[in-house]
Image (cartoon, rainbow, N blue to C red; front, side):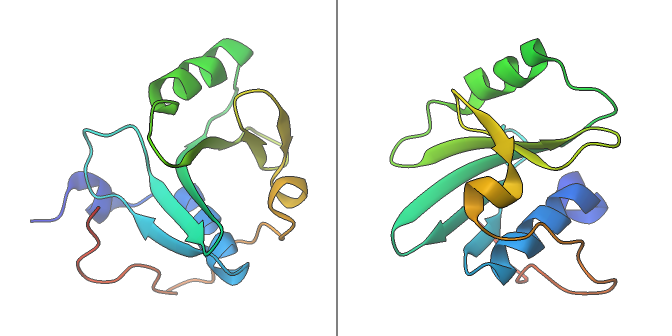
Length: 124
């Protein structure tokens, strides 16, 4: 049975995944609501565990709290990708905040309507 997260979806998460897929990454969406991670993105040389947040406002304290919850993922690089009102999409890697485009060297794009991202049985 799909989780609430899988049924409801998250437009920012979808857009982030779409951008990374378009940029050459393999992206899997985690269907487990008990984990504090949304996406796993990888290419042959690197693997990221990603938590996506789209909020009206993001304080440094809230970004740090999210980071602290995901930084213990083994064999991966944890990232917080976030967006606030009227701001570009940003990436926090534990020490620096930079734009999505500067971090990944790819453009952040909105997913086209009705574009299917996920396979039927995503599990990780």
